[in-house]
Image (cartoon, rainbow, N blue to C red; front, side, top):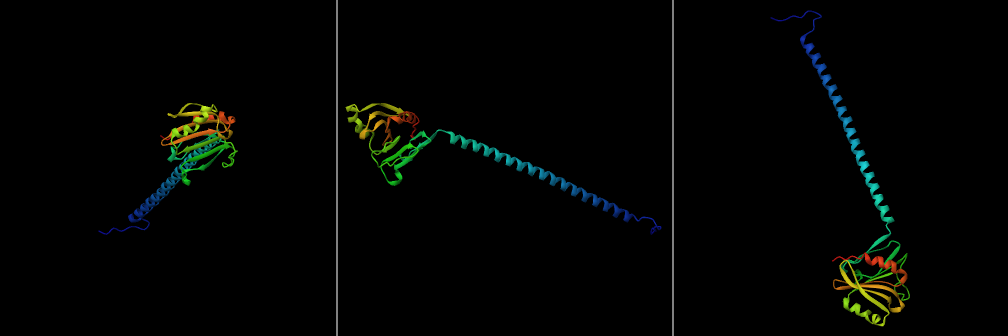
Length: 218
């Protein structure tokens, strides 16, 4: 039997459509609300991450600045000789300059370096005196020591044993050639010989401290 609806009576399908529309709008509203909540949380998390990264960078920058400042205040620099010649290292005053006269890179068999406060005067001028001379010779240790023997026998130089970083050699004090009065140490490095010398008694206090810091790449 076909149902008839009286005027003013709401058709069930209309109710269904209204309900579906309300549900759809509600679901849409909930989705928009959820999305906005997600965006807010994501923005907050991204902000926290960015802030943490910025804080980490600032902290690292502060640590680097402390290290740089500490290095500037450190009174010593480190001398590093060529690897092929035993890589001898030692500490020297920061305000000294270093000049390499001969090195492995220019084909020389002997290595020569000069250190002096502020600047290094010309090394080819025989009258110049240097706070420190570093020579790594191709000559055997016994040959180098023998070169000083006559001065020791004359009493112009005193000689005594010297050791540092498990290496043993000799220390010489007194007057060297060309009226140079100072001190020197002679040590064997592999198949070569290291000589570190100061040309003046004025620099002996520095010399005594410097040679205590000598290390070798054994």
